[in-house]
Image (cartoon, rainbow, N blue to C red; front, side, top):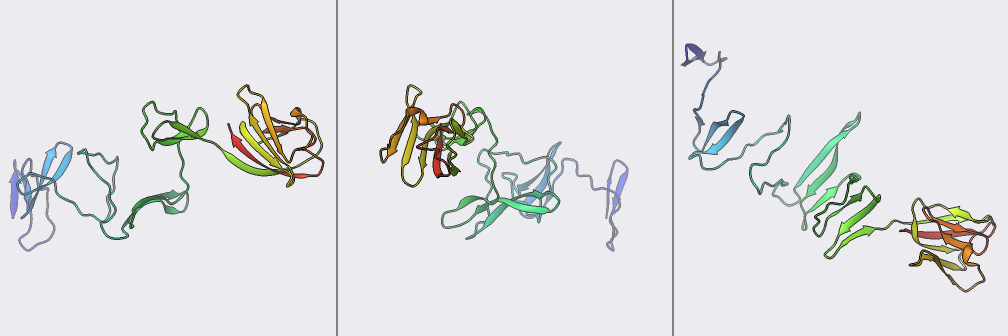
Length: 245
């Protein structure tokens, strides 16, 4: 077989073997029974049905991309295989090791998206236009937030820890954040420390014992402050729960 164009030739020996030269189709199409392969524009190749009315599928073992995936339609989807238990994984390289699964689409009775490894929310400003279900990490306040049906809510930090009393004065117990509520206990008495609307500390103790208002205060920026009894008696172990502002 000899295919020629403008004086150039492409040759395929009748007995088979290696073709010499290129096949130049220009704007012509390669057709099979049910589809056609054509040049769609100067920068793309298209697989269309036989009557050129719709795009058709391309099956590959792997698809290696140099730049990205661009959607042509408004309802393009990414789906796991349509079988019970079908999955699609997303992977990235573990430095110096291999590709590891980071997340997956998991087929099940109730399909779900799984974060296989710890997920990172990039700190960013809260968007001006939110819909119910939005969530993120506020870069200005360093707090998690979410949007429910009525408002945008901040997710407070809650920690539990212990300290051993030393009978010292004005001892700061740091939590890493400004507190709105702290509960301290020595297994006998429970101290509930909160902030009043006027900025002063409210203190409630159960059972009732003698104390001065200055014995326990919320710190202005980090944790709370204890001053002798009832929350800093020497060698007494205290447990506390702290909630962020």
